View 1 (cartoon, one colour):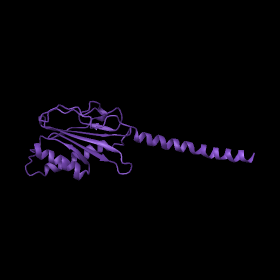
View 2 (cartoon, rainbow, N blue to C red):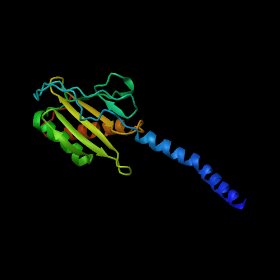
View 3 (spheres, helix red, strand yellow):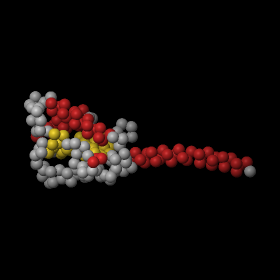
View 4 (tube, rainbow, N blue to C red):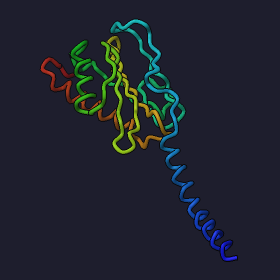
Length: 182
């Protein structure tokens, strides 16, 4: 009889820890649920000319993505207006790449004259987010997309990243010797 009570009390102790373990599991699952559309799956035209129309992959139906090409309001961020600045072409691409890699400390993985890809890695859990920038010289706009690869909700990190990028870019372009501001 004593053995039975000892085993039962062990069982009860383990059972009381179960809600805590379930709560932790749910929290980690919420933070690390998979996003099925990494930014490497970009729909684009085959041309790499300055006027080629790149289209970012639409944001998944999760709250972990923002894009200036999105049609759903909760994922939409503004495009960056390049018209007040006289920088273009390779100089603009170089400025964007420098901001992403040096000032924002992202890993730039692919660059072309109009499309730049980068990866951000979170400090604690090492989650990866995909960042894309597309230069639309015909409309004098710069498009931005930032999406978490994992998780359902990003706690506003991607929207904040886009605002940080736009602020850094505006500051860099204003400091260009050849820029003319309206």
